[in-house]
Image (tube, rainbow, N blue to C red; front, side, top):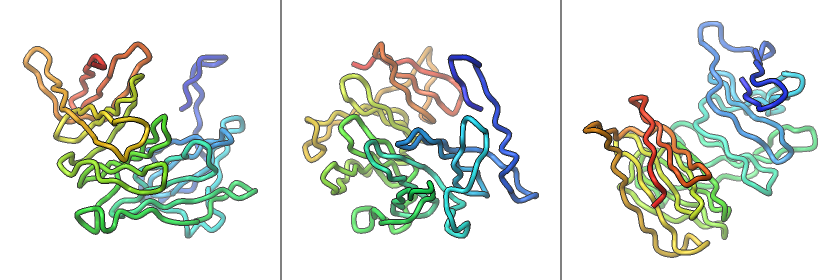
Amino acid sequence: YCLQFKPNPIRYYPLLDVNTAKSKQSNVTITSETLNHKHQIFINHSGIFNLDLVTGKSVPAFRNPAENPKNVFNILNPNGTNETWVTCEGENFIRVYRSDSDGYLSFIRKISLVGISKTEENTIIKLFQDSYSNVWIGTYEGLFVYNRNGSITKVARNLKSVNSFAEDKHHNIWIGTDNDGLYRLTVAGKSTQGAFKYVKVPLVVNGFESANVRNVFCSRDGKIYAGTKEGCIFVVGDQ
């Protein structure tokens, strides 16, 4: 579904042109917008598709269907590039693709955590690009950041199962984790080469506490919304 403010509030895309395994349910789990305002969607068991919001038609994002990954965890289209970054289950690296003139993706390189990450199989759960063009990498085994100069920095290994990010108006990075709650990370300046400072933000209301954050959102008025596994949304001031 696509939610718009005008002219029609909600538009439904049935995706009838996507062939899926008959024994498996087809779920859209990831959406991403490219540089030319096209939309990429990941459908479990089927791969990545380009969705036309006008016609409702979807076509595979790869010219060769065999290259279309079926176990995608996250998709990121970095600002100012014609690239698509893809992470897959059980892989300790980011697949980097570039769109050709026909809109198909082709592999150009990979960004690896090998030698930085503690384990060889460290699934990258979430990618997030901040306003300074740094890309934050959340994994099962810690938090990393891909700096603007192309290097990767280990931020923290004790932050496990990092699954969500958001940036507030003060450029703090808010980090949601599974089983360890919410953190606020401050970076000294635009470059991530400097020192990191991060503190845990307790999510406790009327004696109820949650440590399972599923998503984080920063509103324009400075509030931080943390959606949790238990279904509650906590509102935290950005200070």
